[in-house]
Image (cartoon, rainbow, N blue to C red; front, top):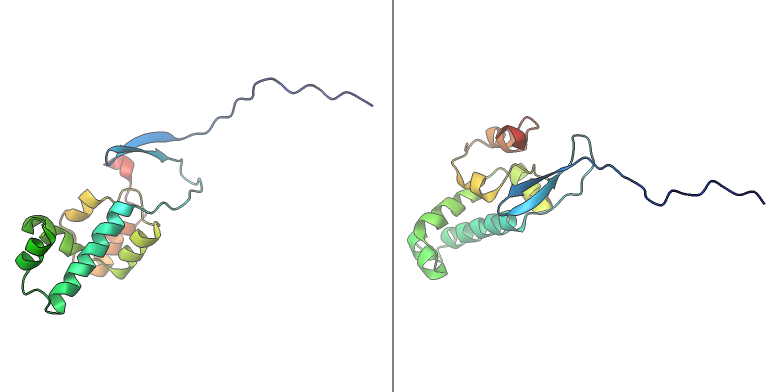
Length: 136
């Protein structure tokens, strides 16, 4: 029986990544080309779901105005109006958010800013590869 070369006692593994603060928590950014698991952003999912729920409440006549819905939910009218705008997102953007396949640069704060109403423009703006979080 021959003896193999002994294994070194320590092994060093280099994993290129960087930590970025996002929404009060730290997120790991991998280099381009690295595979990553899709992570569903529960804050975004909840906001989009609320927007569609509130829109349905208005469309069915359950409430006559955004003010009434805001009062019944105990939420400020201005916040509700901004979140309600999320119901105008393109189905492609909504699907990306719900499945966690959206780019990491999409956050609730950014979605609350004004965005184009045209779905093709939204998809270019929110889902295109040229959107780069490092450039912001």
